[in-house]
Length: 135
Image (tube, rainbow, N blue to C red; front, side, top):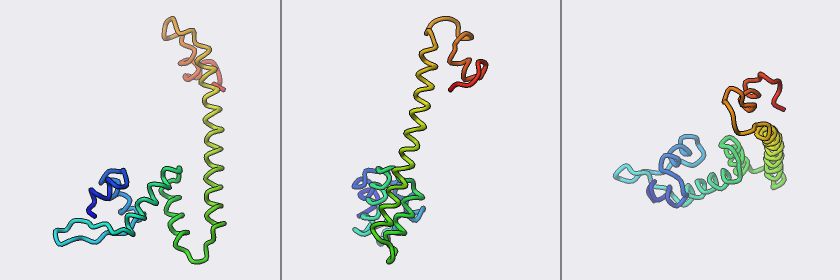
């Protein structure tokens, strides 16, 4: 299938397909007599793997690592599980950080009367650090 069909099947843009190819995340497709890229079922499986891994929150670097692990003969399911557990821990850490940010922003928002001159806005004053730390 040509690049446009591959992109449509994967639900991404043609540019994204080319990008993944340049990044080495998918194989290099053959070219037909007209010079168009032709994506084999194997390359389409690689592309869909990349898309699904991105949907799970894996970065492109992590996806490269997963692809390397997937093709390594001595790797076990436990090794892949460890990668997924590391990703879960990273996500939990981000959630914790985002909750702290949310709480700070709620406190800031609650400190603002929502009226008056902008120069008296407690939110901007805190961000400008005129009134100490935001925490």
